Length: 294
Image 1: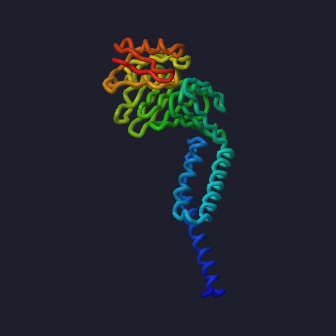
Image 2 (image 1 turned 30 degrees about the horizontal axis):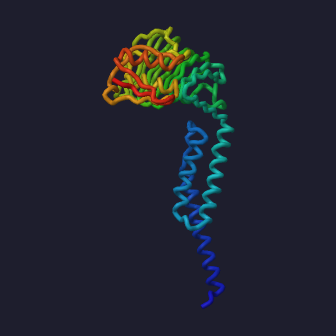
Image 3 (image 1 turned 60 degrees about the vertical axis):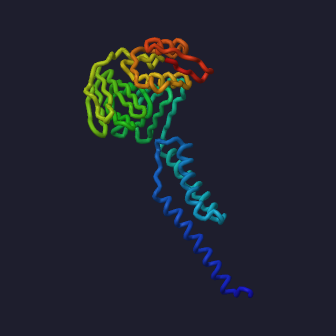
């Protein structure tokens, strides 16, 4: 039996209402999204895309929903990249086997270690405080001025004008004060360091009592790495970063501690410097893989 004109209009209306409902659902969900500005553009774009894919899969048989999702993706992406440009967000990622020197808008100097990242906003820089995010390791020479803060996943380091070193990788967090004063605040504790003092966090996330270190020991900036009673895994991880290699280490070796040094001039020499005091040997499987033998 042929459909009456009114029946056709009702079907069209029902489809329109359904499409509007799905579009509203997607837009309502998107309104609760937040953008992490410490992510790279590629990471943020993928995060947005994954969210939209999840929503679009509600009714994959209807092409119109994919069109809505694609339009929404374009809108949010433009919003994100437009905000970054407006906010003058700067993100710097250093490669493996590289050490990079960076100058901030106030001419403060940062030496960024291999496989480390920092980010900051130039539009907010100097408005009563200077704030940047760090993941990895960096040495700072801060020009005197407003408050200067380094935010990490393990805690925040704040100064007015001084030189200091921050190491922040996974659950390892340590700070060395070379000149002036440095304030460190974690979720569980806080400390103030003066010249020649260092602190780090223990397994519970509390800062250790400050202890002395050699302020002349800034050699990592020039590719020389010193360790004192450091977990052997931390030593080999640094070696991997500096030479862009993969190291195979037996499980029964990971509890050992190492005191010594290596530099980035020669991989074979660096391996000998680490392995010999531990009574180990090594095998170069290929140019990218080293096996440690005990």
